[in-house]
Length: 194
Image (tube, rainbow, N blue to C red; front, top):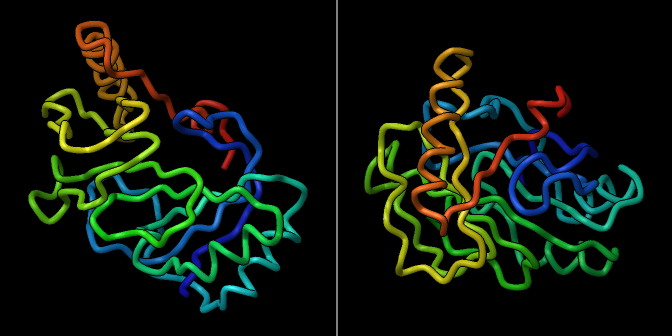
């Protein structure tokens, strides 16, 4: 598996925001979203055992978050099983365009079809949370065919402070008008942490 980085921090997004976690960021993705914050140009080949060893060495925490890029392209049942044996709860943040291995404890699907077209439409049909990145212009999309626990609308970070304020205002307004959606913020960016 090609791993971009492994680090310990606070989960900055979604329902688990604020929880201490070890993040395994996989390199590579099958989509190219304009707002992606992952360096796809570098990574280190690692076995499942090496990944788990690094996760354990990263410090005491129950939660391990598999992210990317698109982790679904590389994550295996073997990795999930080894993380469970090490006492870890396994979460994944995926664009949902590839089937996932079984045994993952928390699935966050963040579909990107609104930005990249049909190739970004999710095939994963069940998620603990659906997190849609919202730019204030496109409708969040219809994902009624999915079985979802939490519906989260997250303002898109464009890197432009003025534009970001406009997007946050539109996102808040949308959530107020559509109460099935919950506002999601990138807390790690607000705090200036990884």
